[in-house]
Length: 589
Picture (cartoon, rainbow, N blue to C red):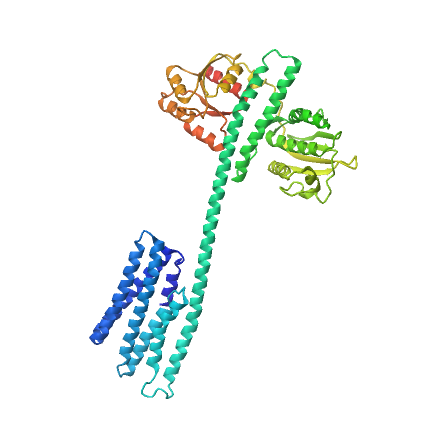
């Protein structure tokens, strides 16, 4: 019986469903045992005792029925609450009836019957005491009848005061059972309370987890929307700036156009960094290496920051330690530039008026790799040695950080970039003056041969190609028209996916550039419709031209049937490279 009780208590009775299952298991197991007991009573005892046994069976059957009703109730909380008081009432009746049956058996003037009555009362006591108790009152109400019955059975009522070792043994047994079961019912209450606390904490944790997931989804959605909304006007700015290069400009205008392009390209790379934030959260952050001229990248950053430096009265200079050494390597340009921009920005904030900020580039070529060192020195406050280990920790304020009012996040991102690049970052004293600091970062990168072919947007497109561009934004349509005005391209526009589908059905195109977010019919559905309708062997190349360039987005476009993706702002070199490749493919066909 004890083992049975232990198995029943393995159910989580703190939950309504668990308590109902526990009560049902108790009723079902006892119902089978009582059925066998009633058969024995019917075979070997007078009908009155058999009748009491039948009543015991009916009470257990009633208990089983109440648990079944509770199990079928659609509201388990309410059903479990009702079952608790119903089960307690029925259990008291069961115990009282069994004790009365033991008394009747004891009334037979036979020592053997006295033993059988005691065994029955002991079973009832163990059953009542070992039952799961979460209330002390219910425990005492349950064990009182069998305890009183056992004591009554043990006493020799013909001479109650005579020495009686049997009664003494029974008292010791009852005391032992009470001590053990009292400890158990205390443990039951403690475990039940602990399980309830754990359940509440688990529920709170699950709720907090869901809130965190919802917040993360909301942030990702916000990043996606912000990235898209910024890229759309930025595409117009960069597109028209690229188109200006084919116009007759004065040297001053050419310089200004180049400044617009360089600033816009830096902003584009910063937007690409936004996409990396989502990858970091899911442990998918990775490098995007590509050929890059580090010397040109640094000079581009300096041109963007030069006006700001003049505005605050800071001398901004570039020191090329190895002018004869090519710095064309395979590296993640966005991370190198992000790190450099953070260090330059911090140096501008730290340098006093009429101070100086110097960017220094140095390198050592080893076989097919280049060891790169980039330093940003300023004449601002020094960084004490004890602060240097904390300089690149997020939210950890140093004396220099407090002076600038920063929170350390920028430098922490720089440290993450260098860790991903297997590089190093640090800070030292300027060394040549009592004030000043040098922030530096170093990494190795594969050497890449400088390009010998002209840029893709200057490559000759072999012959005229027919291009359909589905784009709902008028500014973006004007950008494409301006960029391709001098190229051998027959360009047709569609303002939504439905128009693009109709244009594709009415005439042949060599290439389709498809925006994604469009009215009437979006770009993804238009691609799927084209792929479903086009005849076998007559596949039209479709490239998505969109600001939605998250990894999941790109995977969806390719699954829809797109051949590739061009992001916004438009990479003009990539666009002209695609046009040239399309013309070459047509020649081969």
